[in-house]
Amino acid sequence: MNKKELCYILIVVVMGVSLLLGFAVEVFGIDLGQAAWVAGWVSSPVALAVGFVFAMLFGKAFPDFNKTMSKKLLQYSVIGLGFGMNVDKALASGSEGMMFTIVSVFGTLALGWLFGRKLLGVDSQTSYLLSSGTAICGGSAIAAVGPIIKARAESMSVALGVVFILNAIALFVFPIIGDALSMTMKQFGMWAAIAIHDTSSVVGAGAAYDQMHPELVASQGVSALEVATTIKLTRALWIVVLALVTPFFFRKSLANAADGQSKPWYSCVPRFIVWFIVAILFNTYILSNASLLGDGTAAMGAQFSGAVNKLAKHLITLSLFFIGASLTRETLRSVGLRPLIQGVLLWACISCVSLAYIFWLE
Image (cartoon, rainbow, N blue to C red; front, side, top):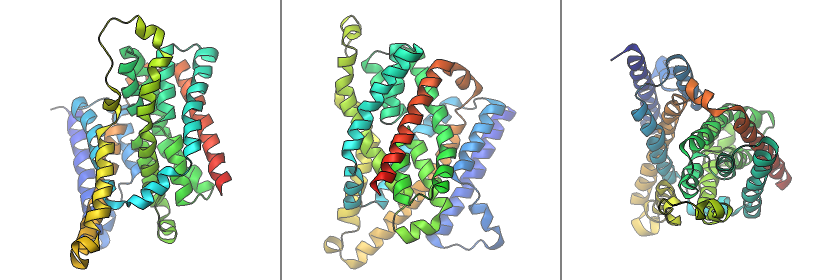
């Protein structure tokens, strides 16, 4: 085992212990006294920054493990967040702005075609993958659409690289902008869910904004993380619609392809979204249902749900280290300039338009 791998393990252990102590303090009320800082220094931006700096200095360490953890740990954590949510609130957040969701998804695809194909000359596969990732949910949409259009490996890599870089920037920049604009928890959650690509960065930005303004969470009765996660995962269901319309845009190239058939549309829906919805339903109608379980048991169920929800938030923070540790120099070099310009233009457009829409609602 070399120094790079030892450093990687040490960072994961130190951050993991700190987050575990933070969980114990929140759930069990443990008093650490003057050592309380040990349980509170690992925030979402810190975790991502540490991972990014490690990747820049040392490159990849345990790449298979890091890739698995950055994906699976986040997905399991998102499922855990479902135990802290209520069906009525989820439906209210998910249904709000449905028309804007439709316009933003197909408008982003149209702008992607204009910027990528007409202005910058990006190849059709890479351009469409970038547009799909910006329109809905970043890497998940790219991973779903790629096999349908039979995308080349290099096109997938470039599109994922651009989205990943912009996600990392958004995680730092969005909470700062939201703070400067004095956005409410609901406003910031909506903006992050619409304008940031991947669920991981949406969740991270929401958690960071909550940490910046705990007084707003208490006074407004809702957290940016809750709003952002619910709306983002609701928007992610549009992967199904995208999977259905994508063959129409690539009908000529697909007609000439001779290798097999694309996956059925339902296989494009990420499973963790289904389990996230199941967790919300289970928490709302069983664990917290006093008429079904009785007041005492329902109170215990609510405590259990709260503990799972808090643990999920800490695991999300840890997952951001693994995400940051994936952003190596090679990833940055592989992106290229023209796809990056397309990604930035699309990102800037959807960020500004969605921000104006959110303030217009008020």
